[in-house]
Image 1 (tube, rainbow, N blue to C red):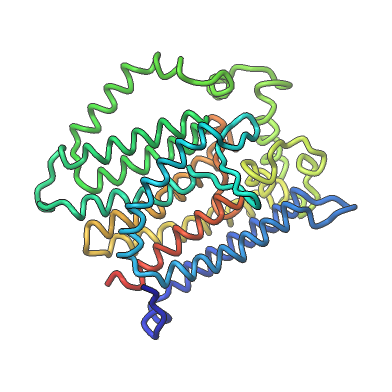
Image 2 (cartoon, rainbow, N blue to C red):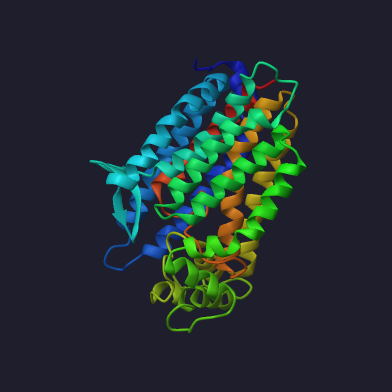
Amino acid sequence: MLVLNKRFLRNFDWFSFFVIVTIASLGLLFVFSATYKPTRPFSLFFKKQLFGIISGIFLYIFFSMVDHRQLMRFGYFLYFLVIASLTFTLIKGSVGMGAQRWINLMFFKVQPSELAKLLLPAFIAYFLKTKKDQSLVTFRNFIPILLILSISFLLILKQPDLGTALILLFSGLVLLWLAGIGKIFFLSILILSAIGTPCYWKMLKPYQKKRLEVFFGYGTNRKERYQIEQSQISIGSGGLVGKGILKGTQNKLFFLPESRTDFIFSVICEEWGFLGAISILFLYMILFLRLLAIAARLHCQFLQIFAVGLILHIIISAIINIFMVTGLLPTVGIPLPLMSYGLSNLWTTFISLGCFNSIKIQGR
């Protein structure tokens, strides 16, 4: 099941690995800056993030050695366990910041929605691969996938975690498009979404409605608009080259909420300025373009679906987070992959990229 030989070292994606470690290391630097105090320079958050990155690198290498066919197969069956975990989370999950998203396992907490993002591509790819008539694509083949995707979306939405639920939904729909579900399906989805908009509005929590209202310009500076306006002030005050590490006033004076997690990109913009922000965006861009180019060269459709699904949630998360902190999208609880503080998201990202590297190494 594990592969470690000359072929592994030769086909290992060293370039992507270097970019991944660089982004994660820069993220650690800004977690340090966001949590720094003169009396305690190295905060508990910094130490946990450092542990998360080191262990994440080991996870990346380990999953790069695992046979991708076994990853796909085990991922399919494990996804049913994820559904059970999501259900359990709603019943006896650990509550934090008004949301019930975690399962407490004594020494650490697990967020099943992160596992859903990781294992959904394996579920979809393996399910389609095992169909008897793979050459004939019919809507009937996609019904079980749509059912599982809908259940997952509703369970995560109920936590409530609208951001992760939407990432899972969008990732699943893109994979179904790659599998050939057809344009009529997406046209039907658009029509039903437009008709059901009033119902969707009623389903939202009060704080979610306020976030949408803020996005459209409503709310006061001291209340509803405070978070996004402080983020935009941080971004704008950085200028061309920034104020320097540990010198961001919005960050150090605690005006910027969630600076170590969802709004870490605002800290980067304030302390490294426009040039620093562009450098981070460039690193993400070359990483994503390289991974998509590798996936495009795969000859097996099901392997291609699996590979794209592994990186799709990372790409969507990065885009949503950056658009969110700049005010181009409503505020949702989506961390910036590899950079924001949080072990569950960090490990999920490293494992996803490790599984992708396994496909790159063995897929030919």
